[in-house]
Length: 612
View 1 (cartoon, rainbow, N blue to C red):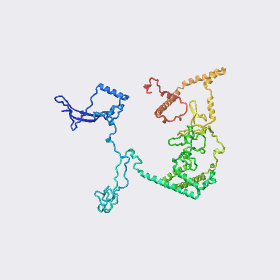
View 2 (cartoon, one colour):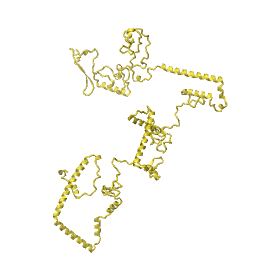
View 3 (spheres, helix red, strand yellow):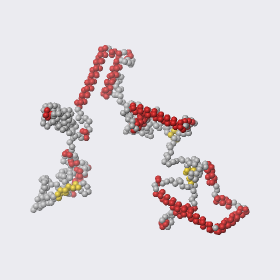
View 4 (cartoon, rainbow, N blue to C red):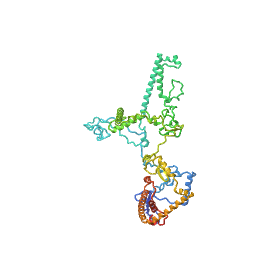
């Protein structure tokens, strides 16, 4: 009697990959009421998985106080099963072992570390593939299981690399091939795969060292023998000659050649000597040739102006000229930028040759700049000669047909008067202050197009809400230019006095009897005209009909205009057409009446009812 194990379910939670272990058990009590734990079916006699008991409030408080003291450093840190301290700041869900794995274990970090059984076993740094052949004795007879063709034990007949024999070694037992090495299967880690010297035998380098030491010893022995021979023959007595005492040497002396050879030999040992200049013997001094030239100036120190050429520290390149704003000629300075070198000398001609090679290859000629430079150079020269001849023939043909040779022989316009009107003002640094202004950016539309003898474009003149031409003050588009005469007429019309002003001046003056008589006659004529109008009502009806027809046409035109405006307002701003083609004229009475009738009045209470 005891625990009855029914089901153990390991599943995924509804809201995430949380592992849940459900253990359903049923207690079976005995007659005395005691509970006995029985093993699960197919299990062992170990302690069953039990969920940890709940802690009392006092134990929970003590545990929390101990954790706080450990975090503050007042209490010793907790120790795991391997004797290592556990950082008190590590959360509990990391340091504690889950209860469903082993509730008896104390807090540890072993389950967070790499598990030994899951680690890959890599080869050591000393392991490498075998070289050469085995040094065992060659077999003299066929062995069972060996290759039937050559007799080696390390492969079979199917994998044999020797020429198939007419009669295999299995039957002849002759010329048994030696066994090959069976190479080990090496698996290196990240560093082992990138080890340059893995598998290198240091004894190979010792052979090179011994070879060089033997050569050096032979040279020294030979030099000592030559010196003994010269001493014996008396050739070294020239050192004590008077010319040598005054600092002069014989031009073809043997001593000079000896010292030169010594310097050449001792250049190899320049790393083992003192600093250059410390050895004051002129014959024994050695110069290290890899020192930087002190007169060489760094690129970024040539011009300390922060606005000068940009220096790229990563590539150590300065493409522009650092002396560009100083007024110096690029040919006179020692360094004019990397681009100056790229676009000088044979660089341009080489680029042109390369371009010609590409074009010729596209047209079927088998030429290449690197593969056959001589052929390409000859072909390019002949191409340039033919091109110049073709241009000259074409030019002569055009001149013979149309003439105009005298225009080609004329000097340039600047040399005709030996002066120009281009004014340029420079600062002391060489920058342009005035003159050579930048060209005005133009749009894709035609600009500065003069028509009908005008010297200014339409829209260059504006007056009283009207556009016109500035050259003649004309407000009619596509009109012919009248020049200064048109300006005078427009100014004269503008200087005419108003009629009201003239009437006021006329009324202010004292009237004579003749003037008073003339006014009475005018008034009488006006009265007669009014009587005549009353008699001609029939004529006025016809005029009213004409007015109604004109008003109807004006209303139709106004409706069409409003529809056009509505369509334009729905378009994008950048796609709307220009309105410079409208006529600049005064609207008629019918057009004004139609505008008033069709105008929207938001303050009208009947506007919503009328659909406005």
